[in-house]
Image (cartoon, rainbow, N blue to C red; front, top):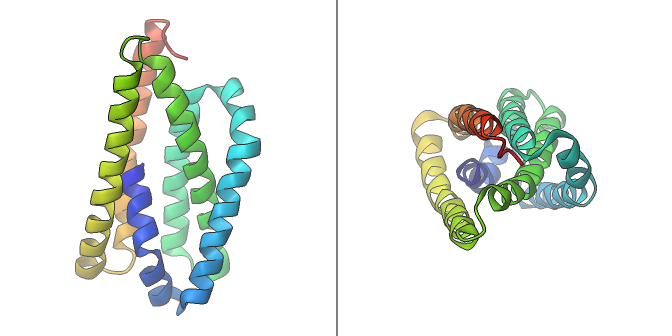
Length: 176
């Protein structure tokens, strides 16, 4: 997910300029809006839905929702519709981070918890490094919406993997 988030956040100013002729002011307002959405979701929503659905389902839903948000943004005829997709993506990104940290810490054994969380954090940052590189390349080579479609393509195997992992853990009665 951090690859996809890094891809989107990096390209967002260029993308909105190309799609909606936005400048720094509109991008700044949007980034503030994203920050508010993330804060609101993490503070009020995640703690209520994780006990009901479980971390694995929340993670799967966030992958799916983020992909839908990217598709809405890529296909949006207006900035108003784009903001709906942005709201969905930001909400799912917020829930993902919290649910995934909880999931990883619960699945890891007591002796390897620190190591596993360290690997998780390191891989997240690798996504934050490689995502912007990919975004710039596909934006320049394939077009303005290509980074958003790339994000969707990356999220599809993520949905499959978390589904397989959750089923395997559930079969072993180890699903948190």
